[in-house]
Length: 116
Image 1 (spheres, helix red, strand yellow):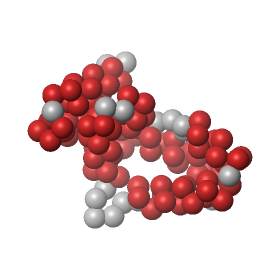
Image 2 (tube, rainbow, N blue to C red; image 1 turned 30 degrees about the horizontal axis):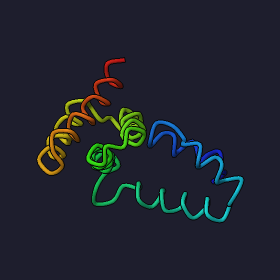
Image 3 (cartoon, rainbow, N blue to C red; image 1 turned 90 degrees about the vertical axis):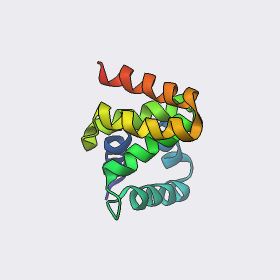
Image 4 (cartoon, one colour; image 1 turned 135 degrees about the horizontal axis):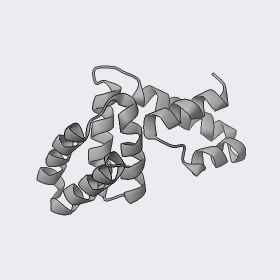
């Protein structure tokens, strides 16, 4: 698979390609190849579908209160058929385990993206 195709698949999964990946491709091709290989392995359908993994990723990003990560994960969610209702349910689990601020953080990002 070409580098452009790999970056295209990454964009499909997470909504956009972080600049760090493009920079890494040029500055450290060996590390880039390793990271992209791991990314492909982790996101491949297995016992969990890519859609289920996306909901986990959104919940984790919200729990960490990582604004960039939660928005990037939510941006890729529609490509996998993830609905706002599914994100809401995943964020309820985040609320139970990480508290109200994590839930609000994720919910605000999801509403912002899905209301466009």
